[in-house]
Image (cartoon, rainbow, N blue to C red; front, side, top):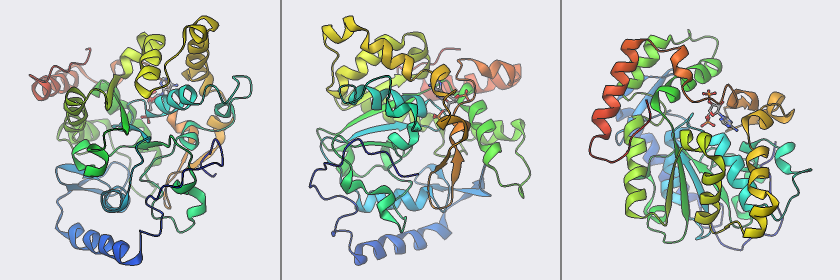
Length: 348
Ligand code: A3P
């Protein structure tokens, strides 16, 4: 399915798919990848056979590492770009829907909204998932109108300067209690694990997670990278927690609108527009739509994921049904130590 494009108008600004990505540059990135890969430490993979550690973070060797290098070497952000950054299983799908609905709220009515027939991941694609596709017409960033909505799992310190230095492009980061992230991730990736690999037990996933060995992990370094950057440049990075969004969705969505430069007017508020957005993007609504029950979402050349896998329970504290007391104590202790002095806390 092609990425959803709200309009065919587009800015004539060059980016990764412009003529500038000539074959020399592409070849250099390929060479960098080929030279780097064999020297990287390996760890057990949750979905793929193994992960590799690159500049402190664990990535899938064929997709995430290669795509990261492409972003680092070629991507040219526009000042108007809006990036949603997250550690996997922290609420990315939810935030994609909320940002898309907020930014495009004057364009679409709620009765026939694109989110009713198009999955959040098609409305708001991953920047780094399609860069190497041969058929670029599927995902042509040049044709995306501004503001482009692009999602990433890339850790903050691995982003190119062009993205972090840029005064105007903005990031929304969503994080979640690591205990819920671990459980959600374990269940999700076991579903996607090839049938020829044995399933990963919760005990094994827990050990790997504690050691930091999971897609884009260590979890704590990922979160802290964006947390610290959000403290330094709050006008550029909005740091959100899944739990706050669950508790006070209206408050958070209003903050989101303000931050993105799409503040809700008093008239909109009195007409209940914020409530409509929250309702449209709620777990209860999105998870029951046909498109999110059956449709296959192509993330990259090699990865097809059913939309339904992105909707499981959507609850805070589901870890209580899975983790033992010892696991909870150990994970809470690691979180406490890692976040000590940062000012960031997760609820228990
Ligand atoms: P659970 O597995 O705990 O249910 P991501 O989108 O980053 O992959 O995260 C997926 C998690 O977010 C899953 O958590 C999923 O159920 C939950 N989720 C998806 N859509 C949601 C929504 N609209 N509201 C709340 N949670 C949602």
